[in-house]
Length: 378
Image 1 (cartoon, rainbow, N blue to C red):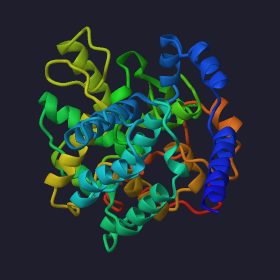
Image 2 (cartoon, rainbow, N blue to C red):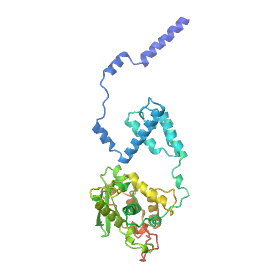
Image 3 (cartoon, rainbow, N blue to C red):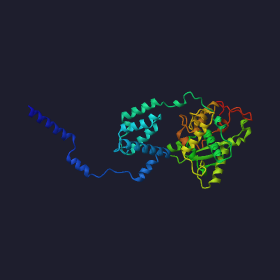
């Protein structure tokens, strides 16, 4: 009986080996086959253009940080693609979650690096999905701003420096441009000197237009986006001590352009350092954040990105039509045609002077002009 059972088990083992293990002929044929095709360097560079340069830089920084963490703990593993999901989760937990930081962007960066290196997709692993869901519950979105009263943009404008030095002029031009255009914190860094020019819109009003790289231009594969800043058409009682031109977005932008051209004739960027080096997107955002933190007019938890929310809420309080706010800020709506906005709208011109609405507090103007718009006005 034992012999029979042993022979039966051996028969099962032989059958299983025949069906489950690859044959010698298969192994020999696979070993003699040509290696899998590899992307050329040109194809890799073209694929990198699918994302913006700031995001590419963030992905590379996250990859380098993860690789150094892996080498310190699991020396044989030297790449994100070769690391297990458990190791990547532990990296995010120790590096970000334990420090009180969210992991949405680092997790997306790791997923992209892993896909580029040929590793299995992280999103298909249930442990990865459960970990990210748990992090979202631990750090709910917007928790920092719960209970914070929105601040009016003019409260920051009143704290701007009034000096004539380069640093004060640069800060005034940057903050005023951010307030009236509602662009994102790092986008002013891409404004080129050659694109800044004074002109008039279709209504004959004098404006200053410029080209820059925005989130919309990157996602729509447009070489550059366009926007404009207005001139203040009425001085304020508050600015009686100073020339109201110190707080005019268009005037300050033109003065900064002239100052940069005078100090650094070969410069290509509007926002530069004292030495003429172009400021990065992070540097532009940091300048505004530091200025906001130094101001006692608003809560210290607000950041440079909060200016977009502050401007749009102020415009809504003044009953500026929402379609003008959305067009100026680059927000899409269900009523707008994407084709019309993308191909037939230039410089985001609107018939409302946002500088008059946002730079000075309502009710402090010399002229008795109505600043509140009714729904049937425009």
